[in-house]
Image 1 (cartoon, rainbow, N blue to C red):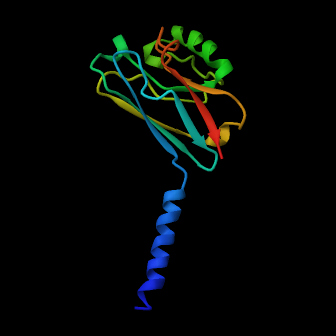
Image 2: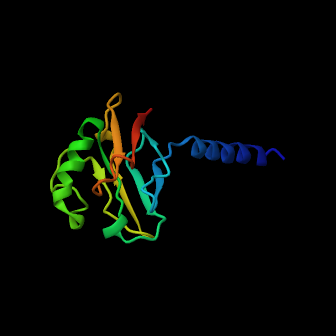
Length: 150
Protein backbone atom coordinates (compact mmCIF):
# COMPACT_ATOMS: atom_id res chain seq x y z
CA UNK A 1 0.00 0.00 0.00
CA UNK A 2 2.74 2.48 0.92
CA UNK A 3 4.57 1.94 -2.39
CA UNK A 4 1.74 3.08 -4.67
CA UNK A 5 1.14 6.41 -2.86
CA UNK A 6 4.48 8.00 -3.89
CA UNK A 7 3.97 6.70 -7.42
CA UNK A 8 0.49 8.20 -7.52
CA UNK A 9 1.78 11.56 -6.23
CA UNK A 10 4.50 11.64 -8.91
CA UNK A 11 2.02 10.74 -11.63
CA UNK A 12 -0.44 13.45 -10.53
CA UNK A 13 2.36 16.05 -10.39
CA UNK A 14 3.34 15.17 -13.94
CA UNK A 15 -0.25 15.49 -15.15
CA UNK A 16 -0.83 18.81 -13.39
CA UNK A 17 2.28 20.37 -14.93
CA UNK A 18 1.08 19.25 -18.36
CA UNK A 19 -2.34 20.81 -17.78
CA UNK A 20 -0.80 24.08 -16.58
CA UNK A 21 1.62 24.33 -19.53
CA UNK A 22 0.97 27.15 -21.98
CA UNK A 23 -0.96 26.35 -25.15
CA UNK A 24 1.53 27.28 -27.85
CA UNK A 25 -0.69 26.70 -30.87
CA UNK A 26 -4.01 27.67 -32.37
CA UNK A 27 -6.13 26.36 -35.22
CA UNK A 28 -8.13 28.93 -37.14
CA UNK A 29 -10.63 28.18 -39.86
CA UNK A 30 -11.63 30.33 -42.84
CA UNK A 31 -14.53 29.82 -45.25
CA UNK A 32 -16.12 30.87 -48.54
CA UNK A 33 -18.07 33.63 -46.73
CA UNK A 34 -14.84 35.58 -45.98
CA UNK A 35 -14.79 34.73 -42.27
CA UNK A 36 -12.29 33.51 -39.71
CA UNK A 37 -13.77 31.46 -36.87
CA UNK A 38 -11.76 33.47 -34.31
CA UNK A 39 -11.48 37.20 -33.75
CA UNK A 40 -8.78 37.09 -31.07
CA UNK A 41 -5.76 34.94 -30.26
CA UNK A 42 -3.65 34.87 -27.09
CA UNK A 43 0.06 34.15 -27.48
CA UNK A 44 1.82 33.17 -24.22
CA UNK A 45 5.24 34.80 -23.75
CA UNK A 46 6.44 31.53 -22.22
CA UNK A 47 6.24 29.70 -25.56
CA UNK A 48 9.49 29.29 -27.48
CA UNK A 49 7.46 28.89 -30.69
CA UNK A 50 3.79 29.61 -31.39
CA UNK A 51 2.11 27.65 -34.18
CA UNK A 52 -0.86 28.73 -36.26
CA UNK A 53 -2.69 26.19 -38.39
CA UNK A 54 -4.99 27.79 -40.95
CA UNK A 55 -7.71 25.65 -42.53
CA UNK A 56 -10.01 26.66 -45.38
CA UNK A 57 -13.32 24.89 -44.80
CA UNK A 58 -14.88 26.22 -48.00
CA UNK A 59 -14.90 24.78 -51.51
CA UNK A 60 -13.72 27.70 -53.67
CA UNK A 61 -10.27 27.75 -55.29
CA UNK A 62 -7.54 30.01 -53.91
CA UNK A 63 -7.57 32.30 -56.96
CA UNK A 64 -11.27 33.04 -56.33
CA UNK A 65 -11.68 32.89 -52.53
CA UNK A 66 -8.20 32.25 -51.15
CA UNK A 67 -7.23 33.09 -47.59
CA UNK A 68 -4.03 33.46 -45.63
CA UNK A 69 -3.18 34.45 -42.07
CA UNK A 70 -0.87 37.46 -41.64
CA UNK A 71 0.43 38.89 -38.35
CA UNK A 72 1.55 42.53 -38.06
CA UNK A 73 1.42 45.40 -35.62
CA UNK A 74 -2.10 46.82 -35.84
CA UNK A 75 -0.68 50.14 -37.08
CA UNK A 76 0.98 48.32 -40.03
CA UNK A 77 -1.98 46.18 -41.10
CA UNK A 78 -3.54 48.49 -43.72
CA UNK A 79 -0.20 49.35 -45.30
CA UNK A 80 0.82 45.69 -45.56
CA UNK A 81 -2.54 44.77 -47.11
CA UNK A 82 -2.38 47.64 -49.62
CA UNK A 83 1.26 47.05 -50.57
CA UNK A 84 0.65 43.33 -51.00
CA UNK A 85 -1.98 43.62 -53.74
CA UNK A 86 0.64 44.19 -56.44
CA UNK A 87 2.61 41.14 -55.27
CA UNK A 88 -0.13 38.83 -56.54
CA UNK A 89 -1.36 35.39 -55.60
CA UNK A 90 2.00 33.65 -56.18
CA UNK A 91 3.52 35.79 -53.41
CA UNK A 92 0.45 35.38 -51.14
CA UNK A 93 -0.42 39.06 -51.67
CA UNK A 94 2.55 40.16 -49.55
CA UNK A 95 5.33 42.45 -50.71
CA UNK A 96 8.62 40.52 -50.80
CA UNK A 97 10.80 41.17 -47.76
CA UNK A 98 8.21 43.33 -45.99
CA UNK A 99 9.72 43.78 -42.51
CA UNK A 100 6.30 44.75 -41.11
CA UNK A 101 5.09 41.15 -41.53
CA UNK A 102 5.87 39.17 -38.38
CA UNK A 103 4.49 35.83 -39.64
CA UNK A 104 2.20 34.55 -42.39
CA UNK A 105 0.83 31.47 -44.06
CA UNK A 106 0.54 31.04 -47.80
CA UNK A 107 -2.80 31.67 -49.52
CA UNK A 108 -4.90 28.50 -49.48
CA UNK A 109 -8.13 27.47 -51.20
CA UNK A 110 -11.08 25.32 -50.19
CA UNK A 111 -10.11 22.11 -48.40
CA UNK A 112 -6.47 23.17 -47.96
CA UNK A 113 -4.46 24.09 -44.88
CA UNK A 114 -1.12 25.65 -44.02
CA UNK A 115 0.85 25.86 -40.78
CA UNK A 116 3.44 28.40 -39.63
CA UNK A 117 5.39 28.95 -36.42
CA UNK A 118 7.00 32.08 -35.05
CA UNK A 119 8.85 33.11 -31.90
CA UNK A 120 6.62 35.00 -29.44
CA UNK A 121 9.77 36.88 -28.43
CA UNK A 122 9.12 38.95 -31.60
CA UNK A 123 6.05 40.39 -29.84
CA UNK A 124 6.15 43.00 -27.10
CA UNK A 125 3.65 43.10 -24.25
CA UNK A 126 1.46 46.20 -24.49
CA UNK A 127 1.87 46.54 -28.28
CA UNK A 128 -1.26 46.18 -30.45
CA UNK A 129 -1.07 43.30 -32.97
CA UNK A 130 -3.56 42.12 -35.57
CA UNK A 131 -4.01 39.15 -37.85
CA UNK A 132 -5.79 39.39 -41.19
CA UNK A 133 -6.20 37.89 -44.65
CA UNK A 134 -4.23 39.81 -47.30
CA UNK A 135 -6.25 38.53 -50.29
CA UNK A 136 -7.46 41.76 -51.99
CA UNK A 137 -10.59 43.11 -50.31
CA UNK A 138 -10.57 40.62 -47.45
CA UNK A 139 -8.64 42.49 -44.72
CA UNK A 140 -11.55 44.79 -43.90
CA UNK A 141 -13.63 41.82 -42.73
CA UNK A 142 -11.20 38.98 -42.10
CA UNK A 143 -9.21 40.27 -39.15
CA UNK A 144 -8.69 39.90 -35.45
CA UNK A 145 -6.42 40.83 -32.57
CA UNK A 146 -3.41 39.09 -31.04
CA UNK A 147 -2.58 39.59 -27.37
CA UNK A 148 0.67 38.67 -25.70
CA UNK A 149 -0.04 36.99 -22.36
CA UNK A 150 2.19 36.00 -19.43
